[in-house]
Image 1 (spheres, rainbow, N blue to C red):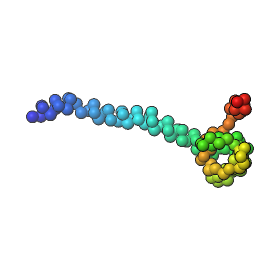
Image 2: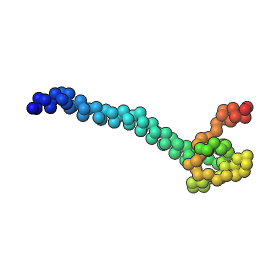
Image 3: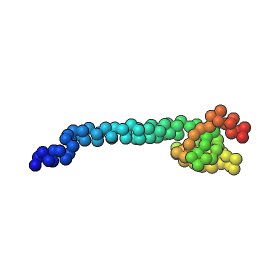
Image 4: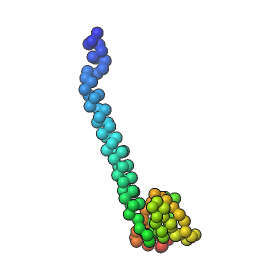
Length: 104
């Protein structure tokens, strides 16, 4: 009876115990770790923005930072001044990117 059960499991259960941690490692390396790195980079960027920087919000609004408080920043756009959360700032416009937009 024990031989039948042994043959049905495929021979060795050690391979199954090795595969599960290996799959978890692959998931961590290809999915979780890059996401954590991206979030850390975004937080560092949002903490480093300064008054006068030209930025783009997550909703696509371009503007210049006029005022910075704890969690709120005021952007000056073509339509006027708008208050945003600091976390809504997506990226800073570089000189190269600004010149490409001006050419369009």
